[in-house]
Length: 181
Image (cartoon, rainbow, N blue to C red; front, side, top):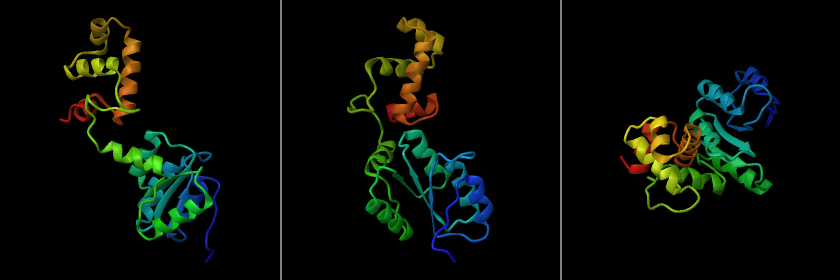
């Protein structure tokens, strides 16, 4: 058996994956055709003992969490040094969950409640807090726009940024995370 194999597409990897289940898979997110995230999702259903390490230039929150939900056990950036990459593969093989420091910080922040007193890059602006408070009252986008003297499009932009900062997908999650409910 070869120490490693290389596949240029998710489809090619999936076609050969049933032949044997590797201990570790190093997966890029941006593959031609099917994404690396979807590939991990499918592979992890076939071989539950395989460990998956995402290896990518992308460190945006949505991709990180999507990859982890799909079955990735670790997430490192291509800006990592060869020594860091090798250490991550070893750590993963030994049962760890390696992550680039920047990615690990984002994961940790995901589990902390966000409050009005937060500071730093993920803190909501005064306008975003105002929009979120009106969302919590159950107002529609149009009603929020009227109350705040802005357009519905601007309300949608604020809500999109709020969801991104809070790492949520909808109104209920945003309100619960921000207000600690």
